[in-house]
Amino acid sequence: MIRHIVFFSVPEGGDADAIEAGLSMLTENPHATVLEIGRNTRTDLYDAQVDFIVYGEFEDEAALAAYRAHPIYQKSTATVRPLREMRIAADYDADKAVRTSLFAG
Image 1 (cartoon, rainbow, N blue to C red):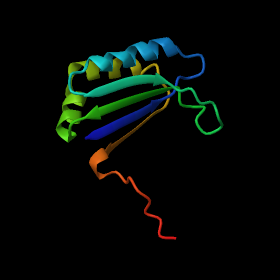
Image 2 (cartoon, one colour):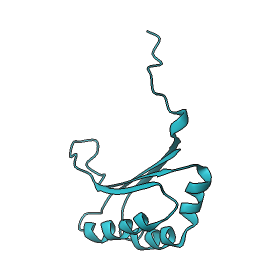
Image 3 (cartoon, one colour):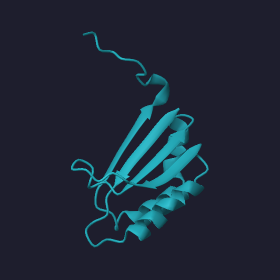
Image 4 (cartoon, rainbow, N blue to C red):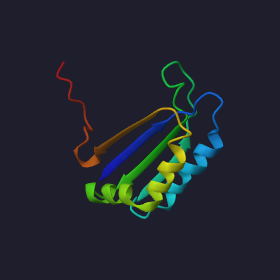
């Protein structure tokens, strides 16, 4: 399973509701087994610039690629890109994730 996590920020004076609405389109993409849009609830020094989180789960790399190629993804991207400031994305294979300590000390 591939986990897909994306962080977005709203520029000062930007329209957070419009960004959330644009991101919400992604929930209609049939290639994700889980797709959630959340507003960041933490406000400490290190994450004050993150306003939205997109979290998705995909059966495999092919499903993630199909998600990105889908017209809903393209429409969401075209809607959100001009409204957002920062975007940081990360994907990882959950089956290969470290689940126990590797520390040898």
